[in-house]
Length: 252
Image (cartoon, helix red, strand yellow):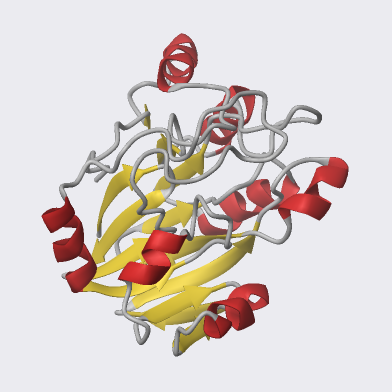
């Protein structure tokens, strides 16, 4: 199992030579409007992909399947929907299957609980995309644990720290964890994804896991940057296993 961060929450996961594309947001910089109820006027995405156009097309050509945590534009954008073949396998949470099919994709497979893909067990787990009433707007979101004989990768998705995240860590004992950090938030309310305090909680609750913080410096709602998070991780003596990768980095 190998995984590369492209940008935001877009990941390229390779298992035994086959490629799974996670939460693709593939548009060039400034393609989309400011997210509603944000406190700045920056268009999204904030940065370009770390790929030339030819490299992006080559990547799309080798993708075997797509894994979606939810359908917000920074996880499943219009450019991705246009570039990906309509018959590509798309694994998603059940609540999103109809919407994806209605946009023309013909091989949509809901992950109600778990399934096998390329010899790996993919288990869907719960998320909470914010605290309180804001979740009525953010909607249903999922994370996934991808298990092979040697490794267990927990893609936490757009979630804050809460009891279901703790239970997922206890149940699966992941060897690798990918967290969507950056404390994205709107002009009112608490963060809708993990902030620094949440990241530290995950690190302490999973003392044997390698942790990678993504979803940073790429959309205008994020309020904590790579330097903020790296400094906090260092202050808690966690830099040896909690990493803050740059766009394009190979995580493992």
